[in-house]
Image (cartoon, rainbow, N blue to C red; front, side, top):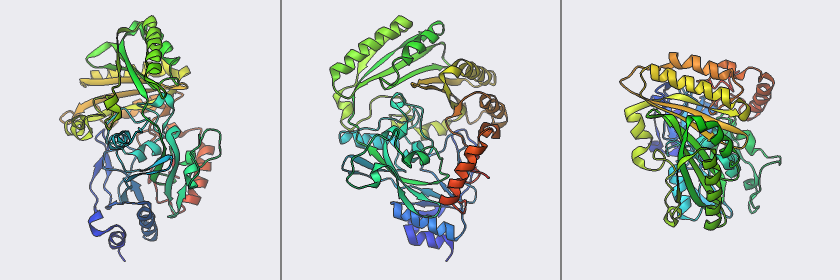
Length: 446
């Protein structure tokens, strides 16, 4: 039976369509899949993998959005869309990996829960991308990465086997904190699809916290002092973000989200102390805004204009521009040199004629996420792949980790990891013996 017919027999003829050329938000071509398949549950994904294995057809995975930093290679693959359903099972929520984070958070909040971490980006990002990329940038990162919110995941390996990891693997067992325990969940978090297709994620039940947003302005002269003060708050609170934009290059917008899982009064008291420390370090124009009760009843709070309203989402952005830049996680010991290089990258982009730029710092207890994001109008030829490539090489020479490994990053990024890659490939040989997953991804390419 031809592959198209075999897949149609699994998911239905209307859920299989010819592949279309894809691109990431930088405008780089990701290739054209042979077919695109929409699935509604894990059983369908497993059957799709089995059919593709029988036809020796490679697979890629994506939701209905563009990708960041060229992590995918779609040419000649069957592109699988994971399930999107959201259900509750005891103390965990079972969320389809193909569900968008905006819709997921809104649904959770309507039921008295919330999604504690998501990228400070477009709400169209799918939950599976947060797992595949081990999301460590955006709202909530001060309380840990996406793995801290996960009790387990359901994944289909390249063999077509279905695995449940974590405490969610045993029905009726309450979720545990994963840190320090032998658990396969961490193997798949950050694997970028090279070991299996994540289909469902068991999210810990997290009631929405009481929250106060402290905002202000830090002049460049006070940056180091404000960062030092803010760093003492990371891990205790939610997220601390500093942003410098093209229309405000002489200072930094500072936002700190102060949370309490227990009481509004505690959140307010913490916010007062956070404000005191930041103002003493040089924060000016300080304003504090408490999250209203309505924000906990089915609507996401106003984290970021790009994330919350549909009008500011991915479709609106990609209709007018493409993204140029990068995201990296740097240890605190390397922050100074990483930030200096990020500033140099912004200056080079401005010199190339890019008018809209954004330099963002997200603070976590052990590292700082530094993102350079420029919006390039489609009619502009500024900052193509040839201009971007040398900058990836320069950042790769620093002691840091890219937020997305992807195909954008140079092979030099993986130097010194030969033994680690060998061990990963041994695991991949067991889980994906035909090497059908994550084609041409530098981490998994042999």
